[in-house]
Length: 323
Image 1 (cartoon, rainbow, N blue to C red):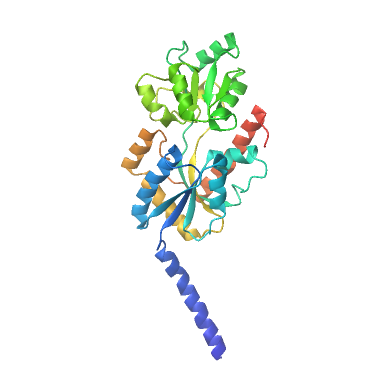
Image 2 (spheres, rainbow, N blue to C red):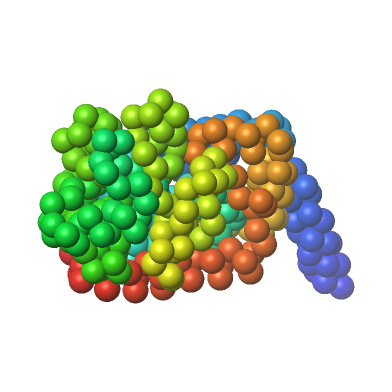
């Protein structure tokens, strides 16, 4: 009887301890892995939002920059981090949706090694032209290229990176042959477009905005499913080429096995931050509009699955194989 009573007492203590642990979360700093070096666009967004969420949760959020190998190094590190509610990661369309189709033996599984927590932003990619070029619309650009196939050039960050995949899919969908010019530094590709050494430049919208305002670039079209809020007069590629859709999204994810309570509270904290007027304005000016909310678990899981399928089809259509 004494043993039974002691066992019952122990069960009661454990049962009481679980809610107390959840209630006390977070009681130490949270780590957020970013698979990009400090100062990049993804890093800047992560740091800005982390500061806001940190204030909401009452604990610092430490940015862990792990750049390299197309985001693989940082994403793998996050997948292997202790799933205790104190490790999260910024994941993206590149690390979660395109890498599975481009990289053989990818050392993480986007669906099975991570739990989605909050969708931060899902802008399209923007195509801009040197303002001295004769075309002003996507249809005019396509017509110009078809008159002299292979004459137009586009600055990209690599054939297998986001801008290269966007350009390759545009060529395939429109039946054209714009020449892809890869740059190890997107900033150099941008400058060469402004100077006229290449005709076109593709990247996330935020990189273009100040140069568009200064008249150094002419926006042509965006690859997303809606027009960019900061560029409402610039049409989507899909308005000319129906069905064309490429998003450059950012999401907060957690290693598989992370307790549900920290995930739920992080989701709620990001949801509040993404709806804050000051955050919405900052994200808009940065060129990566805030998602209207963090999203539910069901919505986020479906979104990731759909994106993996869409990027897979696009990469297959272009004719690229995993390496």
